[in-house]
Length: 152
Image 1 (cartoon, rainbow, N blue to C red):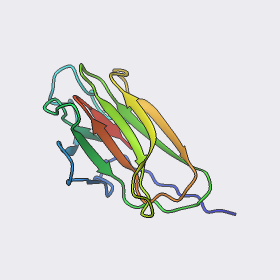
Image 2: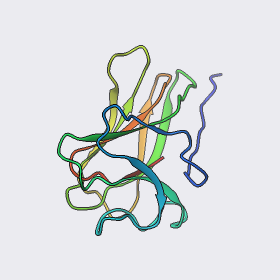
Image 3: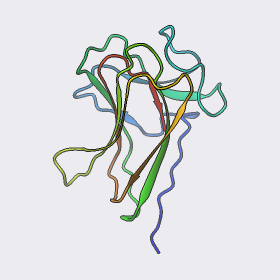
């Protein structure tokens, strides 16, 4: 029997060990709650209680091609099928790109697992990614003009 990996993070207490890839980032991910600072973008609150915390990126100043990566801690578990479930919010004019990559220490490049582009909804959306190898860490990456939020 394979051991499954279960990890949950609501960002209520802290950033759950997520870090920023500061080598190539053009903006910063911030743990926050409430309204986002730019009008007509972002959620009114988190996806669970509406008054909780989420990870947010202010991307209104980013230019096409700029990115900001949020890296998970190492997620090691079964080499069998796994599922990553997260919630994301992409609302606002000029919303860019949200990617989920798989990073393995034995590979030179990250593998793209999931991608969304442009404005999707004024509501939080549920994202699910299936993968079949042990994960070292999973970077969330926002590219282009105006990526808003991601929550995991």
